[in-house]
Amino acid sequence: MNRRDLLKAIPALATAGPLRAEPETSKSRIRAGLVAYSYRKQLEAKTMTYEALIRYVSELGLDGLDTTVYWFPDTSDAFLASLRKTAYKEAVQLHSIATRVRLCQPTPELQAAEVETAKKWVDVAQKLGAGHVRVFGGSIPKGATEAQSIDWAVEVFKRAADYAGSKGIILGVEDDGGLTTTAEPTLEIVKRTASPWVGINLDTGNFPKDGYSQVEKCIPYATNVHFKQHIAGVDGTKEKADWDRLASMFAKAGYKGYLALEYEEPASAESAIPGLTKELIRCARKYSG
Image 1: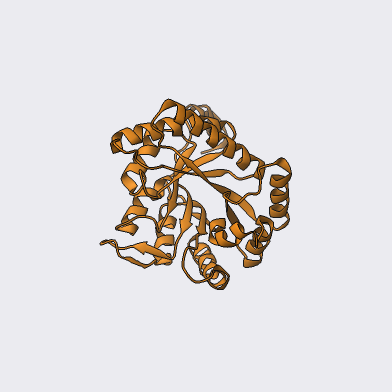
Image 2: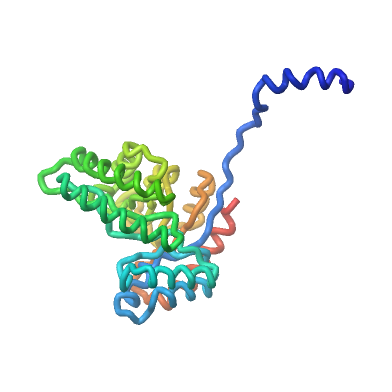
């Protein structure tokens, strides 16, 4: 085609719409982190501060800290600013905060109160620079059905998500007993909430049976991940988790985010976590696209 013919063709190309590229699988982007709950004994006993934990996470070579808030001395601007400053200087991302918010509340008054609690922690996350807040599904109240409980949880989740979205914060409901013991009701809560600001804080070790299959169902909705040393087999027996298998599942699904070690084993965290984090970093690097 000569120059004159090419110029004639340009208007026709312009009206034909954008050229379509062949669809390609989204590449994963996996980062390794630690859940502060792993050092719960030390934080509760005040033998370790959150600032010290941030510095230790940096020494371990991890990318982020999932900042379980249970042992915060307060939520003052001064304390949160100190954490954020320490994290920045140590090149550690406080990527998530883990709260005790429970979505399933059976009365309008309790629902409103829980929404207000969720709002409080969304504000804390924003001040810390965290983009994610973990919440729980909560227990099924005595005498209530699972269907009723899901309705109540969705109501709270929607209202909390509206506020979180206005602050640019994502909410992740964790599979952690009660209403969210298994993948199915957890997924139903997320799907019915129907907000771009919600998903699943996916804990690989919490499902009571058939852990790999349950995890796989939830991966498309995962907003943050807690990696455990053990996982439930098909019959419910706890077995050593195959981290390569799990990480490859997340990579195949194009997951972008953190795999954060949550240590809950009887051996001391001080002796076990350094070796485990090395293995986690290896997996993150191997399976990150």
